[in-house]
Length: 164
Image (tube, rainbow, N blue to C red):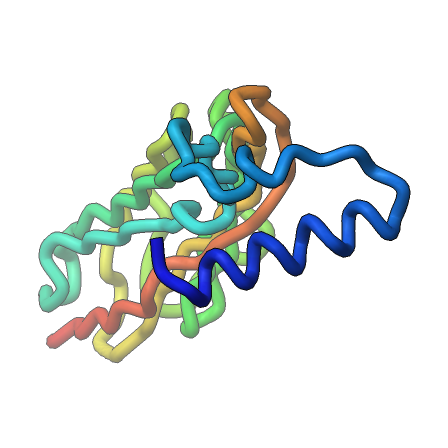
């Protein structure tokens, strides 16, 4: 054991004694035999993956937009297109089209646990960006005990190009 570790342990023992605690200096000097379970932060892994296929298409063609929620439960999805479309859905597929889109017709929306899928049909040439935001329940653990929290995350922004 290093001299600095011994000095630190003795300093802690003196502080504990002054504070009125009975401490065993030998146990402070001993190497630890167990490791504490780390605190897992649920927001550390909460994310949204987005895929668009195809990302370039022509008027009259369809594309599929898929979002995958990572580390979420009971998800609520918000799909926003820069061309005006705004879609809300959830893991039970309760869907509301908040605003229609100027470049795409919204053909279908399907919300599930951990995924959302939107099919869009191009109706005019142009460029739009799309992002998926998710809000939902996340699970973390402190010393083996689960706790629940609500958090949100957004996908990267993807550009879609519609040619004539």
